[in-house]
Image (cartoon, rainbow, N blue to C red):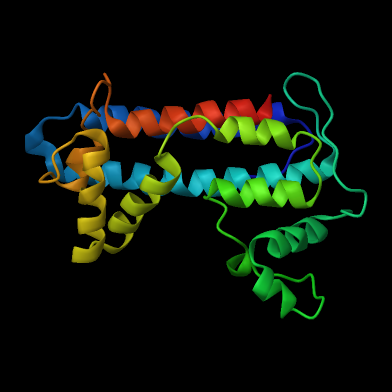
Length: 219
């Protein structure tokens, strides 16, 4: 996902991706138990790709802020005049989120992507945008104030699907209690189950939460 001078361009790109993932998750969630192997594969794919989509969008959104972009409602976003390039922005993000590593860099602004802070965490975008003086920082805080546990809990499920060991499965299954879902279920069964008081599978709630937050960010 690339930075853009218009947030509507960025939102359309991520919205298309989220729609594809939601459709796949919806299909997997309604498949009969006899086809669990296929369901497990598809829910695994959706979880990992949703996690990646969050990180890629957040990074592209942050870098877009250096381009003085227009929001979807026609407002112009500004940041500090000293931020003249993507390198400047990433360096500022490192200072805000990884200060100890930034201090050891001896002033270099050449960062490997692996050095960068975890873009899937809201705190990274919040702190980074504050560091470069984004004029709409209060709107970013408002967007992430929406009550959801997707950003923390999705990571745990993503780690399970990526590593599939006893530790990661226990962590994922223990999260089920947050949604009044039995912890005896397989992580895939947890994600295709509905949280207490909800009418759709948990994985669909998470995709919808991400879309709603990204839409508010771009407005």
